[in-house]
Image (cartoon, rainbow over all chains, first blue to last red; front, top):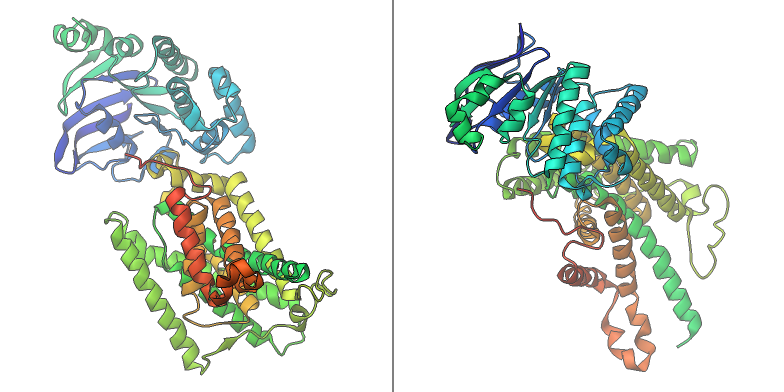
Length: 237
Length: 330
């Protein structure tokens, strides 16, 4: 049984019909990539899953249970962490406080400390900057913090929105290494939204191609990467 | 002009200014915290605060004849005022602001002013029913003579300090320290700051923003309640409409310090308290030949002076003394 199922979801921003019936599934332990151009509806799909946006139609089930209409903070408590577009670090909280806020739902102080140490081990740069305000970090460091923050609850399902956006190639490499390690070592299920299609298809097992609010293509990441239209549109020919 | 008189006047300004300043600071915190989480000026806060003052009056009135220890009466008055004003503030948010959360910003502002007017007359009605129109505080003797059972050490002929003055400062400082600790070092405080900075993302962290907003109103209202009791103790009386002017001044203090900033609210309160007391005594200096024009500036000018200072500070530092110049988030 798949961990996450999105069925016929239609979402709107005001009058803009952003998702016109999206279907996708993510199996437990999988890394699934959702690729597509600007405005295709990738971010909207993640926002609909995590409860930031309520769909007009369709259903989202997580572990067999419908989560449509639940508040974002309740969906998060089920084990879904969403690293949102633009990282959304709390600029006036320190790195440490950002991680503490990530662990808002964790009451065991020891566990919080353990996970914070794990996060610092994963991203040593954050450890050096632990007392710095989030807003003073570089883009790459903020992305690391956003991921580390999402991991504070040890999520079953991680929704990653454009983790490579605006980052130098070296940082992009680091971030994708971490994504692979999370999946391999902890078995975290990951739904990855990316414009950097070649990177995304490199780490994902399966992929969906989204275009103007609809799924255009789906299959094994390797097959999607070989598809002529995908190569032309997203992989630079 | 005699140096002794100058020293006498300035010491008095300092003591009075700090006292009033601390009361403003406590009230200003309610404005600034609510503004922090909702970007809303809670104009009903002046009535929430005076409700605390009225509750304090009632407690002292009811307990007046009892032989109970004066400090115990004070503690009961403070706790009762915190509870009533705190939950009143929560109720106001729930009924008058939350339904308007997505309305244009001016709409909840008008609703706040409406709540403010309603509360004034509800208080007047309730006290009027009992035939009470002049709510003069019945203070235990310890407050009017000595502080904590001992004569106030620096209460000499130069600065008449009463026990109640010391109480105002001690209670205010305890509140400020407690609030600073709460906001900076506790899980709730972190959540309040997170919601203030980015409500949507705080939801992704598992924070129920509405609950945090309610708790912020509870804390802000409770502080307002304490401010009301201290106000009543300091000025010896309250009335249903007495909240407006100190409310506006506390709001001024919050803006002066940088709205949304907690240390800013405290600094703004103290600056405002000192400033208006200084302006109130300016005519003393009219004896100096060159300053003769000060003769006509009496104590009644202190409000005007305070607001002129506010205007000047806002012209040169629009974000307030400790505020950050932030651009609107997209």
